[in-house]
Image (cartoon, rainbow, N blue to C red):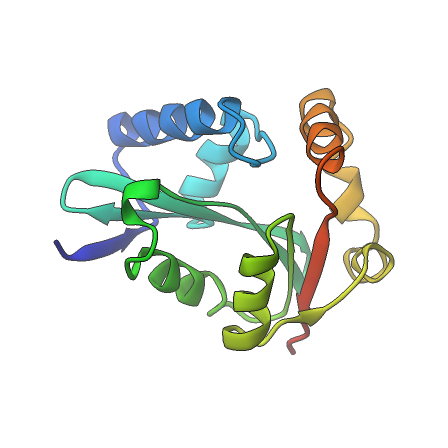
Length: 167
């Protein structure tokens, strides 16, 4: 089946996508929760990129602007049935096509290796993320749901940080 990226969706489809994202996030897939309103705004701004195989939503990724020239790539997910296909490569290439400095944080060493080998990221640190994002990388994680999600993951894994400095 042919994969297709979409950034604009009709309102009825947008609500279904948001519901699917929230269900996957709530089921402990190492994704930091985002409010429905933030996801709706991201869809309206072309910052939430969805991947479809035919009529099936198979993945998504979020570009979150932190400053004028710095964005975080996050909430990236590909359904298990489509991992190993071109879905992640297609999504990651589209997400990294934007300009400016890009930040990528994960608990998955394989994803970080992919980002450094194929997408031009280099290893970084929380300190550098704070400096480059003017603190917004941490500030947006201060809500209760985000803190709870992060605290749970940090019990078993160490966060990895990658940065791609752009113009």
